[in-house]
Image (cartoon, rainbow, N blue to C red; front, side, top):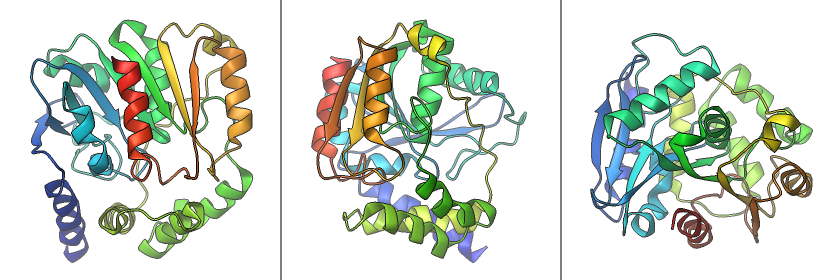
Length: 280
């Protein structure tokens, strides 16, 4: 119980430090209540933010101020992952379940569609959703997307194996520190992600299938891909090459001097610019 309390204290502490007030909403879905932290003008065009695995919605601490200046921002705790969403309804098992879950969130906020932004695992969900129903995704922004256009680095996967088998604070911290390679991130967020690993243990994530080349060639949503120059999660050169080959209309940019886990927090200005350029 102490570990649970420590995690939620760290989560709330980071959320409280957001530069603008967010309203916490527990959105009813067939799979249970989904925590969405909402900010920005009600009249603003919606932006839906999907974090990386274990990162929680708090990871957008350095992005929400710029995004919510004129947009309505919905920062989501992914169902089945670390955070305040609770899978106490039907169990998420398939990609189609993820799509029903996302539909329920947009429907609750009476948004027919939104600019959907995903980082890492969140990018996998975002891309799968855009391929499933382009009408619900106005623009698509993928931040260092893993297993979307190329496979993950064997070195990264090897480092991640102990964490996947038995998540602990030490193992989560070891993986993130190795990937960051000295890039500084908010220590409060490191508390959230490391305590989350220890508190929630092995989560029941639905991992979307990597799209086929044919599926990617059929992507009709205006897409922006933002890559981290020093990402250790995958070969960004291969990712960029495959994006340009399969989705030639996509915009591909690289953020210099940053890593996979440092996005979106450290390079927030570049990330914000890419999202706002896409969203309009």
